[in-house]
Image 1 (tube, helix red, strand yellow):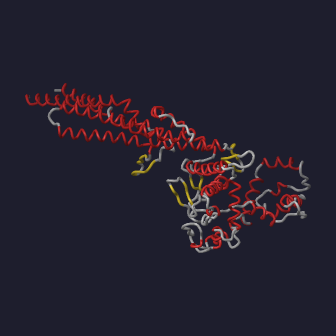
Image 2 (cartoon, rainbow, N blue to C red):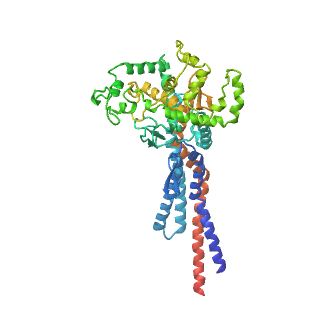
Image 3 (cartoon, rainbow, N blue to C red):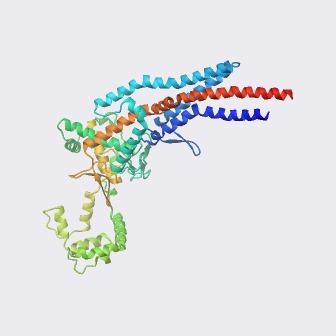
Length: 511
């Protein structure tokens, strides 16, 4: 009896082992194959919380795993039905179970190869017509993991170039500069202001950086194809909106009735006085510029930090070799008492006031500057877009030109505020991390940017639709026969165990 019990125990262990090496192993291997897809931002949608610290994955990247689980579930249902319908002949039940397992494994392979392949070929042809290279079905089906990892490397390089810190972006504050609340849109991976523009503290996500660059360069290229300069066209359109008293832009600023707008279904964000409430009666928004109090705070901190920096003291003799400082002791001024009044006195005392005046106005004959002159300079360098009002380019009728205008603002002005410039300017344009202590990287050409965006688009479309199926297919092809054999072994061991139990029962009855 002891020997029989040992045989039963050993058979139980192998029965469980063979069962685990069947469909459970295939599901596990599909999970492993889906790893690169889950790690890739263009394929995966991230994690969702289920209960407590238990999370589950969502999005196309994990669909192969769910397909594998569905196949396993179908087999389990089939097992239960067999147990109910075929009770006596266990070898018949075993044979049917093995055939069922084979059908469940071969069926998805045939479905993918014969029904999904034409869809893939059609997509490939459509991208090829646009000049975008897409790998063949055979290469994608066998090397989808490798292609996904290569794409992730391209994503990482893109994010480094443009200083995109997080794939899904981030927002420094739920409140805008005027106190209004920003609104998160998870599908867009963006935070918006009430006027539909990006929130003041929003740092680009990969998705939105792509959209801005696409809107900028694709529309620019479209105008170039017609022999036009889109920047000149935009400037002319903005000038027309500003100068035409009956333009929707001027109607908006003056608080006209909604019915008088030529735009279809136009409505104010809050009320007809929203523009004046945001920008003041003169439309300058000076309340958001650098005030005397804010400047005093900045200069106080600046003076203290410079005064405590030993390197500054060593540089002053070199400055004296270029500028006659006379008896002026600059280090004595660098403390928390530094103010605009002191700076103005120093500049005038060194005889530089007139030079600064002439830099701004070559015809100026004044020899000194004053605090009003400094604040005038600061106003010229100030830029403010109210989160509670529409921008002027909202009223551009041409859709392509309007999209370009928004993209131009986001890429250059908003990007500069958050240290993530998307489009450079000048003869040697730079993009990315451009701040007081960082100069960015050389900007890619228009052709390079558009080619990169097209590759991302093609990969996202193909990978989301087919790569999860490839993860399933790969493991069904490689391990399907082995899994079917393991199902047979598990059923055979079940019959063996039942026979051993019968012998054990007989021996116990004899005793």
